[in-house]
Length: 134
Image (cartoon, rainbow, N blue to C red; front, top):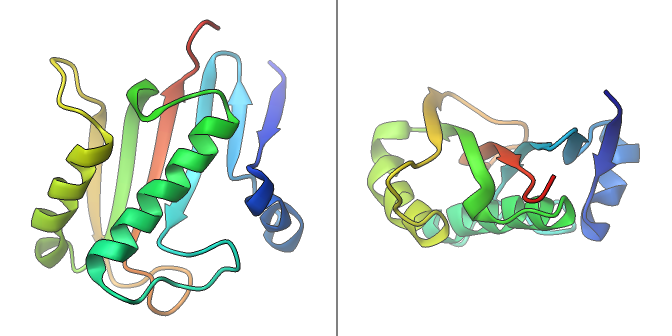
């Protein structure tokens, strides 16, 4: 099956700079690389944990949209947390703003880690979505 690069305009530089795809379409599935709390210029959001988590979800949304999906199309997610136990209550609250409660929520694995790619990054969100109509 053919693979198709999915990269929102503001993330296209990541493909060349780091040789990774923000998203890859394969058939009717969209595989989104982990997104962190950063702005388009790769600056880590460090104003608050809430702002950091919100930015990570917003970046996920940009990749989903570029691939023809919404948060409702997510079927699986994996999240990575520096200090999982401290983050979890706030992360859950913010997650519910983006992923509405339904009878069949996405499968989810949350992993506690010691660090992410760049200093100051606190959470990374990786998702797989089903592309509607395909």
